[in-house]
Image (cartoon, rainbow, N blue to C red; front, side):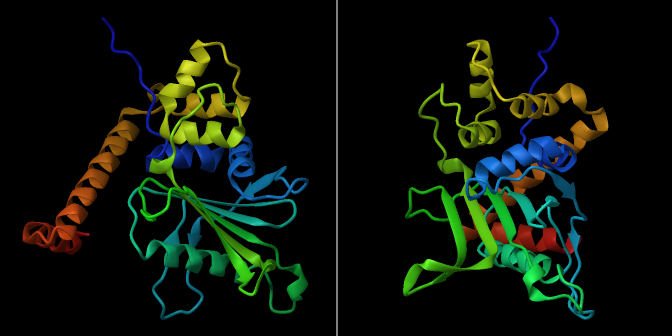
Length: 257
């Protein structure tokens, strides 16, 4: 009996970048579903951009590579990152990258009016706000005395994926379907079996996660990434418990990297 082909985890670095970093139509659907865009301001076309953000100050070693970076016809830029493990400094990293992207929009002689909003969407496969049941966190510059007044420029969105729970199998809202794609692929497969129609972009993304689309070398890299995340989670758990073994392993790992 032949082994049944499987769907890979789209949160895995290799798969996530393949799906959202190489297929504009999928990325447009995904961003329109999860970003806080006003009606009439949806994304219609995107252009992928270099994902490496190099520091402007020569002596500042602060290069960072994001998963997906693109801009639309209005000049708005979008940074998308999949983060498997939460660390408190991640918000600082997101703000740092969004700030660099915002500043670099202008040449020296250009006017500030040309600046467009930068959206940073971070999908977290971890819980960082344990006291809240909310899974969707939207940050922007707001007047604290009048919350209706804001300054456009940067908007940061963090989604805690583990808090997402399926309530209605037949719910076909696009944001629900994309969250289901990231967290409950089996439920999408159940919808297909029940002859529930799904958007073309969702179907295409599902096909791109099928292991038959990847070489043995890519599948080996996929498994290596899983092992690395599992090891890091174990070390972090040891550190939180004050385990000396975890500390020693983390120091030893850092020395090798």
